[in-house]
Amino acid sequence: MNRRDALTTVALAGAAMAAAGSAKADTTPTSTLDRIKKSGVLRIAVIAGQDPYFHKDLTTNQWSGACIDMANDIAGKLGAKVETLESTWGNQILDLQAEKIDLAFAVNPTPERALVIDFSSPFLVHSFTVITKKGFAKPQTWAELNKPEVKIAVDIGSTHETIARRYCSKATILGFKERNEAILAVSTGRADCNISLAVLSVATLKKNPTLGELAVPRPLLTLPTNLGIRAEGDRRYKDFLSAWADYNRALGQTREWMLKAFETIGLSAEDIPPEIQF
Image (cartoon, rainbow, N blue to C red):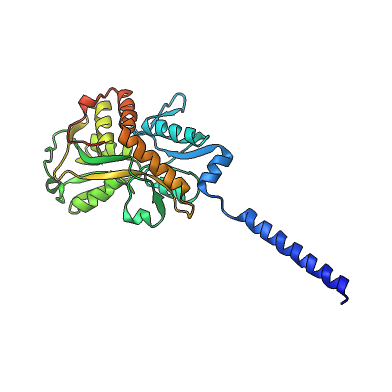
């Protein structure tokens, strides 16, 4: 091989390496923040029948609620618009992992979930409550529900189920795909009660006051609720959401979004038991 041929070979090899490197760069996963900014779309999970978080108008298929207001605020700061994907409390984690959504609202940061997704700072702190069917003794403690003859309805994969199994392990726990089905079980007498976050319980009883009563058993159980995101090396999206959550919670804006959503279903701040946090 003469000198010219050798130089040509080196040049071709260099070009091939550059092309390979370019192809590799093109297939490198884009961070969530970069994808949102590039597409101009923030994809979120929405869950039917979960006032005040989410409300679906069945005539227009339009979504509203506290989490929609929050999502619009987040999207606005990123120069994006909100796109929704209907899901469930349990499935929205899977939707995150499958990259169908960029953000899941009202996710409780359990250790198990921390192995598969990441979280922002808490944007709310919630209390757990019990909706009892008519005629069922209103429990003062969680221990009163921890009996085999007590039937507790919960939505599968939710923290409602986690609380039921943690504090009422001896009870008969009935799991349902959606919370609406668990509430129906209480209203039809198939279950004695339902365990839900306070914000969901007070909204449910406002819409159906004949369903039963609201109980806040002792000890008072609270749990932070966070924004769920995919786990990734680029921390900018997580840091942005944590700053957003801290800022709006400290200013009281998050509470205002919640109260606004409560008002649409006829609830005011005075209707919420004082021991309930949100």
